[in-house]
Length: 178
Image 1: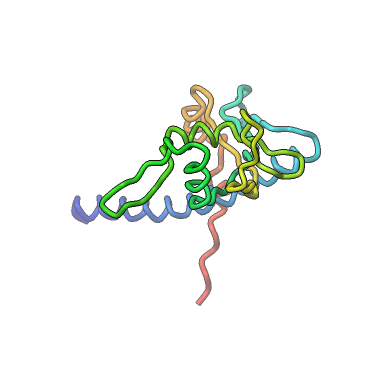
Image 2: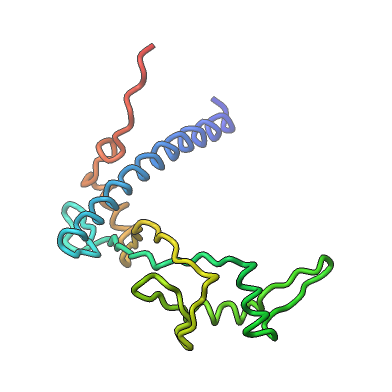
């Protein structure tokens, strides 16, 4: 086998393995995320530390992040409201004349919104009802996986010295029989 064939073969094998590792990672991550969400619901746990066999310190952590309430803004009604309440905050863009709310004012107003108990959205500064805004369903909780300092290196060392068995971790599917 020539050098270029050897290099191409190595690249093809690593690409195929990388694709399989991605699938295994996605499945393992979904399992861990779902378990952490359940644990949070039962016991209020928001972070778990990740430890490796034969290594006392945590190499990573998985943290649950609670989604923030989202809002849906009816842009046409927002511009109309600003024309009445804050006319200097409406700008017209060209070539096709389009009225929009100045981005700085939009950001300031939306950052101070408050949701009342009845679900009404109000300006947190003035208490005025903002009928052009609705509360959106928050997305499901999500997680972040963060490696501790030296965590990635410890995972590599655990692989090299045999503490991690990649076949079990990857659980690659058996070949289909023809």
